[in-house]
Image 1 (cartoon, helix red, strand yellow):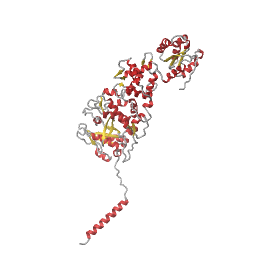
Image 2 (tube, helix red, strand yellow):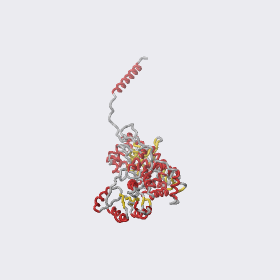
Image 3 (cartoon, helix red, strand yellow):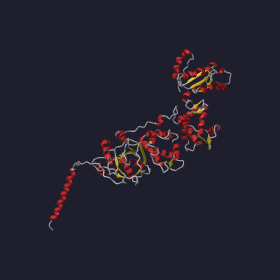
Image 4 (cartoon, one colour):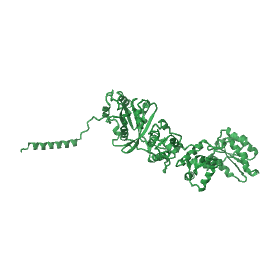
Length: 573
C-alpha cells in the first residue's frame, strides 16, 4: 500500500500550509512529546481540527518514550484513554521513539489501518458499544451463516464462516476459546455448545475493544459491505441488460433457491408462511419490497384458509416481481444470501427470454410468466375475476377498486406450470393504454363486459376506437355474470358477430358464483403463448390469386371423366 507522509509544522506562521495539507489528508497522526504538547492535544489541536470541519481519523502518538521513566501502560491509561473517550475521532494511541526506533513502523501501520479499517463506523468508544449500523450488518451475517436457522452457529457453521472470510479453516482450539471469551460477558452468548446472535455480537465487540477491528472488517467485506456499512451497489444492482421485446424470469437456480428458502423458514411445516415466519424470513432485508407493498401483499397472491401465503403463492409472487421489476429480485436475492457457483452471482438466478414475435403464425412465445391487463366498464366484474384467480371467496357486495391492484397465480397448461399476472385497469386506464411502453409489456388483454348490462360491450368498442394500438395485442373477450339474464347489447354489432369478424374466439361466458372461471385463465395463457391467433385481424375478402396449373389439370381431368362417362352411356348394348 502506497502511503504519502507529510511532515507539518506547529508554528502559527505555517498554519495556512497546515490547513491546506489537512484538507488533502486521509488520516492525521498527532504527535506530542512532553507535558506541554500533551496538554495542547485536547486543549487546542483536536478542537482546532473540528473547527476546520475536518472529519478524519486521528492516531495519537506519544513520542520520545525513551526519555520517560514512567510505566508505558500508565501513560496510555492516564493520558491517552481519557482523550479517546472525549474525542471520538481519536481511533488509536501508541507510544514510540524515533531515536530508539521503537514502534515507528507500528505508528504508520495504525495510520494505514485507520483508513482501510476505520473503527468509527463500527464502535462507539465513549459508550463502549457497537454502533447500530454495525449491529444490523452483523445480525444479517449471523442470519446467513446460520444455515439451519436454529438460532446458533455450531462448530461447522463457524468453520464455514471462517473459511469464507479468511480462506483458512479454524483451529480446533479456537472454537472453545471463542465460546469461553463471550460466555464470560453474557450467559446468553452460548447455547447448546453453539454461538448465539448475542455471542456473535459480543465477539465482534471484543475485537473492537482490543483494537482488532480489522477482523470485523474482514468479515463485513466478505459479505460485500462498504465502509459506510451498506451493501455494495454492484452487488445489489449488477449490470443486467434486457433487450426490447424480452422479459426476465427466474431460472431453475432461482426457483430452487426460493423453494429451499421457503422450506427452511416454514417452521411448522404446514406448507404456508404465517406472519411470524414472513417476518423472520425478511430479517436480513430492508423489509417487504416496495412492489409488494404497492400490490397489497399478501392479498396479491395465493393464501390458505388462514390467510397465510402458500408455497405456490410464494413462488408466484416472486415470478411476478421478476417480470415487473427484476432489479428488485436481484437486490433481494443478494439480501437473502443467494450464492452461485458461476461468476455471475445473483444474475444466475434469472433468465432472459427470447425476443417476442407476435406477427408470425407458427411462433410460440418463449415465456413462462405473462402479464395481462384486465379492461372493462365499471361493475363489469373485473375485481371479482381477480379475486377468483387467487381463490378469494365471492362477495356479492360491490366495492369499487380505488387503488392499483395486481394479483398472480399459476395456470397449468399441458401439465406445465405457467404464471399469469392480472393487473386491473380502473382510474389508471388512460395512463396505461396510451403508454407504448406499458402496452409493449402486456402479453394479453382480458376484455370484460357484463353480459347482463346492455351498455357494457359498447364501452369496449369505444375503447378500441380511442386507443387503436391495443388492437395489436392478443386479447380474450370475457362475458361476465353468466348466472344473470343475458341482455342484447346496445351497439351496432353483437359480441359474437364482432369476434367472428375479428377472427377471434367467441367471448367466453363466466360466472363467479358458479366458479366457472378456470377456462378463462387457460385461454388467456394460451393467447399469450401463441399470440398470432389472438390478435384481432379482419377476414380477407379479396379473392386469392388463381392457381393456373392446378385449374388446367383439374379441367383436363374433368373433361376426361365426362367423355368416358358419355361413351359408356351411349354405348349400344
